[in-house]
Length: 379
Image (tube, rainbow, N blue to C red):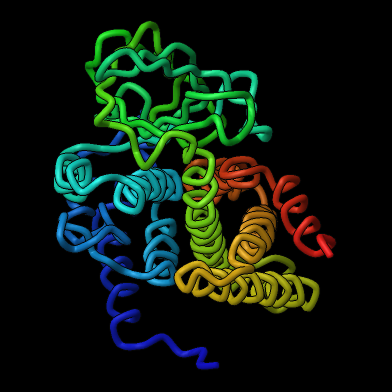
């Protein structure tokens, strides 16, 4: 039980931190304000290996662990949680192809995905199936050497901008076993996108509906076997939950750091805010709760890497705690800044808007409680 990071992990963390300071911190406010999708910076991130963090080396991936990924996303989110989260979604999509796709499919897509020459999105949620993901309706009917897709996906990060869409479709009956996974390339006839959603946060990434209307996709694009899609989706979400938790922790840590600096500089009633015991206690609680969340997330990441039988339960526990705690810590940091925290001159209001959705996506935190309680009570 060694709580120290090894030399490689410290190196990954430090490289991500340096990259964030150079490319994310100076630009994130503009990306947020102007709804800019920073594709050039994504390619620069991929040059450091962040486009295929846990993808095999034979197709250009970095072949790192889930803990390594958590360390990277924690640092990236200190600069821009929205862009960090998008890189997480891209990596989740790449991992599904790498882990379940045929070698031909891996070799066809992943070299460009790992360099982020091609960007990947993940399509599971539909207008009528959110938390009840197994109720998805998008159909894929086999027609010779193609599948014909009809249906719609909702709230898809990267919709319209991404090059490939790792999509969950129904090829069989209405059970989870009737779901399959297929890669749809942008530009395929019958693939279209809805208007861009107007969101509270996550302004640096496009979000829209993805529509399929008699969309013919080569059967060779099937990931895994027919009927394996729901298993693939759930396995991918274990890692996605860790990453989004890490993004919450990183932004929350940045908020604590800024709050401490502000408390030391800002004076009221003739003394710095840091001299008031009530505020000292508040910052102590924020740091304590965030560290507890970080340790649980790191443990869960190790369990997912090792394919521990309780990995899904602990990933859900870690996601729930990290995203709830992260949002609350940012909210408290904003409060410590007073009226200044509410201004866009400071990044904390942006962190607050970006982190709110972390309690909803990759499975709502209510669903995380459901996963954990079912695991605990299954006996």
